[in-house]
Length: 392
Image (tube, rainbow, N blue to C red; front, side, top):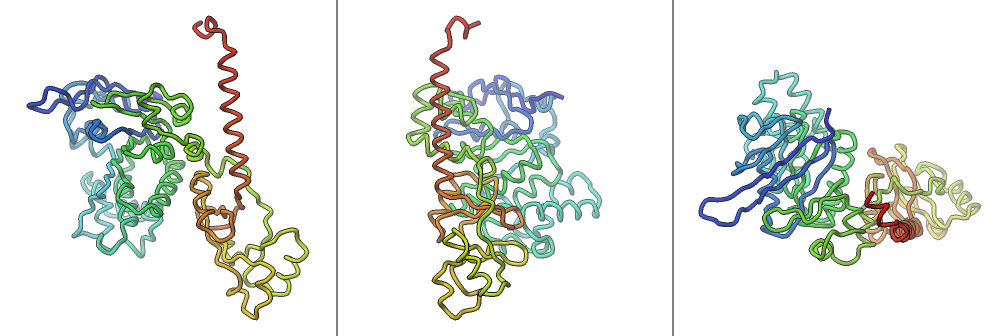
């Protein structure tokens, strides 16, 4: 099996009546199981390039190789059933249920009713929507973020090896957008799909992409590389200008919470414990605050010493536990949550919301310093390389 899932060869789109092609001989290899992000200025042809892969837009010339097969001239409807497609406007059918929306492609493929229903329920659960609650609802009864999740479920319904995503989170509020990005990255860890993802936002590209194609006019790649390479070794002034300043902060989007050491021995209590027992535990520790967990080990409240001076039930003491992040979140996400939270730390939880540990500002500063040291060492080593040896 080849490591390359999609190969674009000299892919060109020229619209009638125009001298300049919208896409000019785009050539690119997209590795199997990776997220490749197309990013560039408005009008550079990134969405046109994406739509030519499943031939929603027919190329004028060039080849599309999908998993070793030339699909440039195959039946386009058959091709599209092998490729999931998620768009910014979501595109759900408004007059049918969520179940029927997700089942669109399985129904076209002639799946039997039981198999289709099982797949719909499985995918709704995967994207965090209880099938019993949402299966029979209509799109208008869902929030924008929930509709976007359904759009992802529909794209995954027939288990396609490739997903095309055209600004899938662009029309969602920033908080929901961050959560959906993180949720999608969690899914990708399990699914290992090959994904082509279009965005205009370089920060989103850095966060989401295994590789990034920064495109100039006519979809000519200025650089096609990992986010780390693009941030530390921009190929030219166009890339450097497009990435912009603040590369150290942008690199916080490269590091996941799971990649740093978090504090797992925080001072904990249970929300159903006796108040006097909790107070004594806090007094005997070196911690200034205690995190209370519920019966499912989910963070509930923060308690400090002054909270015990009031005659209230434990469940009403202190402050609600906020600023919760999952391991696939970036350090940038964690920092943002810390600033919004009440305790100055981010609480790391698993997919079920159960406590995993605590991340504080010192952990992030340490990570930044590690990245700076690694970058300095890279450039130091680069200067020591003999050019003749490098060429050899």
